[in-house]
Picture 1: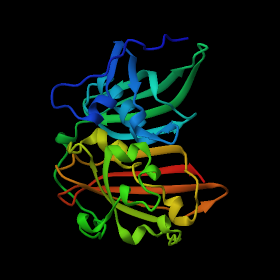
Picture 2 (picture 1 turned 135 degrees about the vertical axis):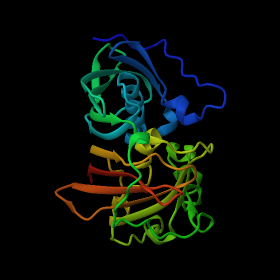
Picture 3 (picture 1 turned 180 degrees about the horizontal axis):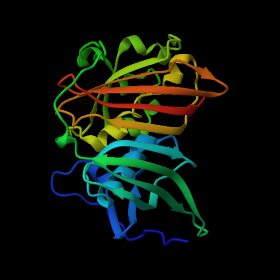
Length: 283
C-alpha cells in the first residue's frame, strides 16, 4: 500500500500556464512520482482522460532519457477523481533512438485502499531528431474561421451546461458539426473544432495528448445524450506543433454493442498533421 502524496504542492516557474501547473509531477524516488490532480479538468465528477494522459506523459518524460511521446496507449480501469495520485513507472528499454516504459496511476481512498485508475504503455523519442520528409494523402479539415465558430459558452443551456474542463480551453466548434447541441444531430458522427488553451499557452507534445480527447464526444452527433467514457486510448505524436491554434477533427464510423470507436486528427497552425489517435469508448 503506498503512502498518499499529501506533500505535493503544485507550482510552476513564473509565467507557467495552468496546464503546466495542473499536470505537474514530482519524483519521490526512482519509478515513483506524485501528482495533485486538478478539479479544473473534470467532465462531471470524473477527470478527462486526455488530461490524465498528459499527467502520465509528464511522469514518463521524467523517467525516460527521451523527451517526447511517440506512441502512448492507455487503458482506463476506473474513474479518476481530483486529488492526490501516485504514478509508478517501469522502464522496459532505454535505447539510442527510442525508449519504452509502462506506468500506472493510483489513488488511495480515505480508508487507505489503493486503486489503480489507469495503465499505460509508451514509447518516447526526440521529435527534433526526425527528418523533415512528409509523404501524405491526409488533408487538414475544411473549417470556417475561428470567429465564425461556436464557443463552448454559446451552448443553449447556458454557462451551467459547460463542463469544468471547457473553462480551461478556447474551443471553437464548427457550426456544421453542432446540430446535436440544438437537438438535431447529423448522425454522421463528426465533430470539428479550433482548439487552444484558454491562457494562450502554445501547444506541445504533452498538450497534444490532452487535445485528442478535448472535444465533445462524437456520440453526441449520433444522438447519444450521456457522456461517453473512454475504455482505451492510443495516441501517436507525429511532429512538434507550431505555435498557434490547433484544428481537431474526430469521427466515429461504427457504434455497435454499446461501444464506439473515435478517431482524431490534430493539425497545427502550419497545416501539419501533428497527432492522431483512436479510442474505444462506451456508449
